[in-house]
Image (cartoon, one colour):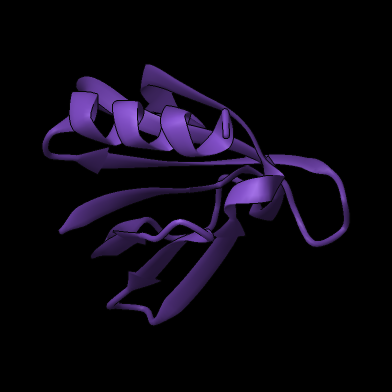
Length: 99
């Protein structure tokens, strides 16, 4: 379970919502339930993992998992989620991107 705070390249008017965030050795995959949306970020395209209390002017006043990556147009982009066990997500993602 995760709460999606949007993808920067799509703009601030795009919907945020709940869904499932899945991490494998090759990709970070998010599926939002309503409205239905999928976002696939290959691990090799991730530039940096950060934590901030807001993303695109939205906040839950708790740290978010923010992923900065190169999108399909090879442009720097970002997406953020509120997740449980943020420290665990940070640790695993940083290990994968530093391989």
